[in-house]
Image (cartoon, rainbow, N blue to C red; front, side):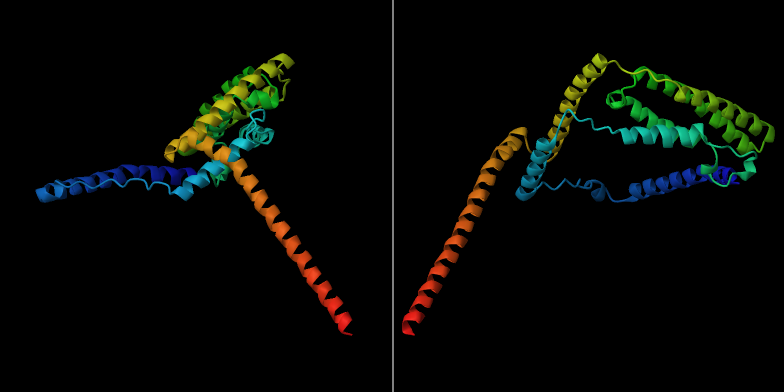
Length: 284
């Protein structure tokens, strides 16, 4: 059974830890026996290689382009991601998951509800719950998501009991945990499928204004961190951004001059061919 393999591996942890500690003691003994001259010279820490001028220019161009494309009115969170967490991770993984009648029928963790799988699904929900754009994208009040999250937490306790019953090979405890989970699945389905309170139009507009300010602050923070890491400042980014129009104008001028040269050369070539034809006609 998969749960017995998990317990067998878990039982080997103390021996592995003891072996690691023994290795550390041997290393400490070797260090004590080492000459003092070797201990006087610690290893030199490797510093990060600074960016070259070309790499800095490329980074400034990238950040400048990102700033030109950035629209604070557009949320970073998408409705598709919200649906994935609510439907695939939570509903399919917890609310609609079928539990085998006997623990022996479970071949892998994906065949049933486990404490680890439940914790991972709830962790994704907690991340979604902390996103200030959630209610902006769905127009559902934050209070509903918070209440749903509190109800989902009970699944951790129920999943832990099911794991313990499977590990102990206790059929009666397993059936009891299975029945408790199935009964609570119905409660969660009723809540998730019920009517969800919506934000008012004024409340949604206020939330959008708040999130616009939040997105602007987050974007500036991310750009400032990347500039600082590269040894650059916001002034360097401003200079690069102001230099781009000049570069574009110079590029346009060069392309115009090149086109004019081509037209002139083609026109002069036609004139030469015309003179040659006229000369050949006179010769005839």
